[in-house]
Length: 273
Image 1 (spheres, rainbow, N blue to C red):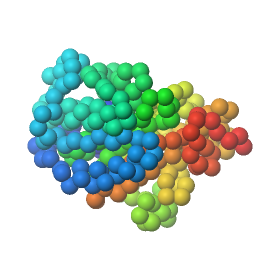
Image 2: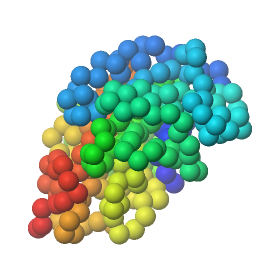
Image 3: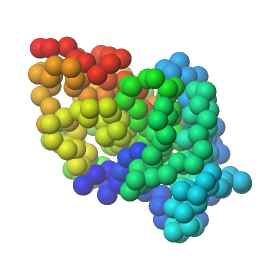
C-alpha cells in the first residue's frame, strides 16, 4: 500500500491523493498564504515555488494533452488537476523556465527535457517546487493539510520507525507526527522514483518500503532494500527531507541526496563505509 492508498493529498509526481473526490472543497487562501511565506527559504535552496487553489478563477488547460486528460475527470478532480499543472508552470517560471502543455504517463506528469517539477495538493490547495535546468539533484514535495489518525501508523511506518512518533524531535522540536512522517515519505517517494539512476535494488511499492531516520531537524529517507552502512559506489543512501509546518498541516520537500550519515550531498554519490 502506497501513501495514495492510505490518505494521499499529493499528486503529479507521486502516489495520488486524498482530494480526488473533494468536489465541493472551497478555496483555502490561509494555507496558500502560509505556503507563500516559505518562498524565500525554498529560493535559498535553489527551488521555485508555485501556488494556487482549486477555486481560483481562470485555471484551464495549457494545451491538448491537458485538455484531453481533464475532459475525462469529474469536476472536483478536474479543478485539482488543472491547479496542479498551473502551479508547476509557476514554479518553473520562478527558476527562469517557461513550460506549456504538460502531458502525463499514467498519473505522472511528463515534463519536457530541462524541466523538473514536483506537484502536490491537499484540501483544495495546489503547490509545486521546481529546479533550474542542469541540476540533477532529486526533487519531491508533498502537502498535507489534514491530520492522519494515529492508528494508520501501521500503513506508513515499519516497527523500527514507530519510536519516531514519541521520541525524536521534528521541525518544531516536538515528536514527529504521523502526518509529518507520511508527508516526508511521500516527498521522498517522488524524489526517488524520478531520480536519475533510481536508488535501491528493489522497487519501492509502499511507504513501508522506505525507512525514515532523523538527522537534526530533517529526515533521511531511503529504501529498506538499501543497507544504511553499505552504500554502493556512486550512489547515495537516499534523500534528505525537510518538513515545515503550514498551519495545522505540513509541507515536505526533498531537495538533495543524503549520504549514509544524513548529510546533504549535491551529486548521486555516497561515502563508502
